[in-house]
Length: 519
Image 1 (cartoon, helix red, strand yellow):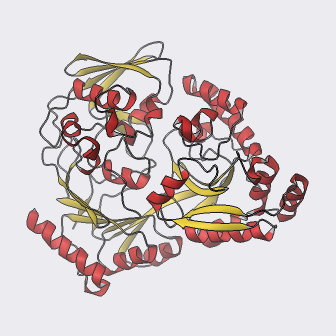
Image 2: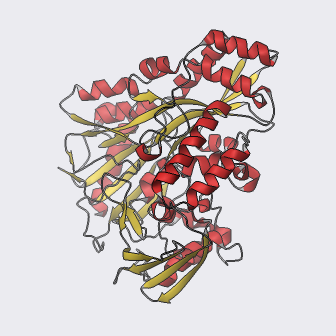
Image 3: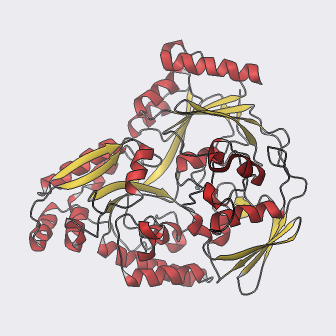
């Protein structure tokens, strides 16, 4: 194994130095081109799909999504029971599973994981932060019944609970590794998944290798190397030269190039994705709803989808992606491109032409050619008299600017979310109680008491039809309030060499490599 890894490191180094020298990668080792450096390999500490694509291969959760769906099915739990009132979940755990560090997986380990996130007095709570602990805010207590049985008591029924258990934030980390490494655990991950962590060289590679003792059968691949290549043109060059086996988030103008070549396979699939602009509804011009609506009318989203994204996305109508069919309001229509209407609203609102600061990222998970999109959006807004200044940032720096809130810093920012339940994005990014200082991701400080009530009620409603009514009403209100510019729903994509077999895109946007092989 070490000789194979050494060979692939040399091939990768040659490809970086001169793509023409790359001779392809050895069998059994998959090299993946990622769009950014991961922030951490602690699944409880990250929020980006870029990081999730790695950690989903190192860890397991009590549940996971059934292949090709967002339906939770057993994983580290073989099954579970739910009380009649929906407030008690009892998980029956898989026997004989160990973490990669050799420590046992059991009910105590499960309790440690959730207590660590949720209990501020837990001795290892300071290994956080835990930005998506929101997913489990209804958990009142976690109890060990016996070594292979763990009970979750909720404060109230919580409809997305199993969907969130199956999400990346529900992955189970080794308590012993957390105790050993403390706040540095994210650089020394240990899970129960199909691949074991080997090394992380910052801005170069993350390496994982086959877990031969994996409870669900050893993977076919010997190792996977995740390489952060932030520049899209460099990723394309690496793919073409043989320095990569698999590339995620293919730039729109390169999809056809790869599809026309018999040396590559192109993958495309719809999923619950939204690309939008956060508008600062607390201070500055966008505190006025009319100016927020004007921005929605001013931006030619059809042109963005057709010309910049070259048909790899669809125009978004509101805050809920159409992939959530049962909860999606298909009567809701996108804001039409109407610059004259935008000008009327700006005049009515008394917009004085003051400069608008626009945060744009150079690249990041699900961000859809963000520099080109940002430049086109800037031009559309300036065409109706809005003075827009772009400030661009590397992805993790960008998140550090946006997530704490735009107040006093910027008027608008690009953003993208890929979610597993219609509750997630609006609950974490549109409620008043999700303002950044309260621990959420409502970076634009939008607030509407009616929306708050609907979202709070929907997550405790176990009747799906009633939940759907609440989400559709929420969409109508948010569409009118326009706290965001609703831009596009992306059809995710990837490209691999012809040597890669068994790879499929998932609606979760996770990169699952357990069943992938390479000739």
